[in-house]
Image 1 (cartoon, rainbow, N blue to C red):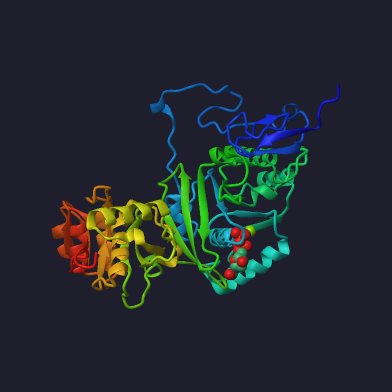
Image 2: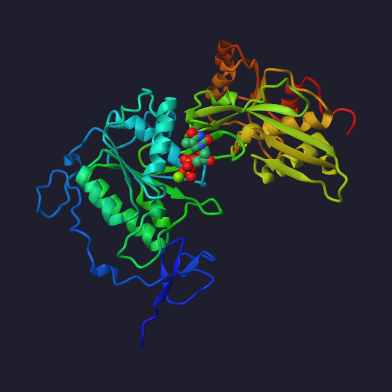
Length: 481
Ligand code: TYD
Ligand code: MG
C-alpha cells in the first residue's frame, strides 16, 4: 500500500498525525493541525557530527558526570548591544552562546532594532547579519540611513562597522557554513521563518522547518559561543509563530510591541534564562531609526492641564516605575445595558472596580456608560492601577478635577479595602522625580519618612472611600446619589 504523502502537523506542539482532527491529540489545542508534505525519513540523515561543547573534557572522551563543585566556572561576560534599553531587557547585555528570540508584529521595527544594535556592536565584536527576508541592497540602504542619522551607530561614522558581515540568504545549509567559517561573536537571523532547509520537503515557515532550522542554529551557536538573535513572527492571535518547542529551545524570548498609530515601541522579556522577565525597554520610531526613550514616564503623561476624569498612577514594569495618566468618561446611558469599554486595562478589572464603587460608595454607576483609556497606548496589567481607575471614574462621574500633582497607587479588594502593592518606594521616587507632590497609597506602607524626604505628601488610606476623599478633597458619596 502506498504511504500517504501528507501528514497533519500541530502548529502548537509539532506532533504529527496521518489524519485530520479538530483537536490535536498531542497537546489538546483546537484547530492547530495543518497539512504538510511528509518529510523524508529525517532521522537517517545527519548534517554533521554533533559535537557538544564540553568544558574540561578532552576531545573524544565520553562525557561523565562530575561533582558540582568541580564544574569549571567561567565569568559571564556580557556584550552590550549599544542600547541601554535593550541591555536592560536582556538582563545586562548579550550572553555569549545564548539564543534570543525577538518576536513582534510585521513592521513594528524588529529588523531596524537588530540592525542598529548590530552596527553598534560591530565596533566591539564581530557580527554576522543574515537577512533572509530582505535583499542585501535593501539592508545596505537601511544601514546607510541609520548610520547617517547617528542612531544606528552611536559613533556616527558609517565606516566604523568594519567587522559587520552581511549575508542575504535563505538556505540553512549556507547560513550554517558561513557561521562556521566566520565564527562571529554575534549572529542575527532575520527571520527564522524565512530560513529554509532544502532537505526537508515542507515549505519555509512550516513547523518542521522552523524547528529544524532553529535546532541546527542552536547547536552551532552553543558550540562556538556565538550569541544568536533570531527574529520571529507572531500569529494573528499575537503568539509567536512556529512550534512551542522554539520557545523552549531559546534562552530568552523578547517581544517588541507598540501601537501602529503611536511612535513608541515597547520591548519586553517574556522568558529570560539570564535575567529578570517583565523588564521594559522603550524606544521611539523616528524617520531615521529607533531612538531610546530613557524617560518614558513623560511619554505616558498627558502633559495637558488636569481635567475632570483624569487620574495619574505609577505602574511598575519589572523594576521600572512608569507614571501613567488614566482618563475616564462616565455619562448617562441611552442603552438598555450600559456600555463599558477599557483601552489598556482589562475590561474585567474595570467591571470589578465599577461594582466596588457602586456597592461601597453607593454610586449608581450601572445607569451610566463608562469608558476608560490609558494614555500613550500602554497596557497596564497590574492591580496597583485599581485606585487610579476608581479615582478617574469617580472624578468623571462627579465632574471633579483631582488636585494637580496627585498620584494614586493601590489595589482594590472586593470588600472596598485598599491592598498594599509592591515596590511602593520605587514608585514614589519616580513620582517625586517628575514633580508630583501628593501620593495616595494603601495604609501601613511605613514610608512616611521616605516620602517626606522626597518632598511628597503621603496620604494613607485603608479603603477606597477614604482614599477618594483624601485624593479629591470632597466626599464623592455625598448628595446626588
Ligand atoms: P522593520 O524594522 O522593517 O519592521 P519588522 O522587521 O519588524 O517587520 O520596520 C519597518 C517600519 O519601520 C516601517 O513601517 C518603516 C518604519 N521605519 C521608520 O519609521 N524609520 C526608520 O528609520 C526605519 C528604518 C523604519
Ligand atoms: Mg523585518
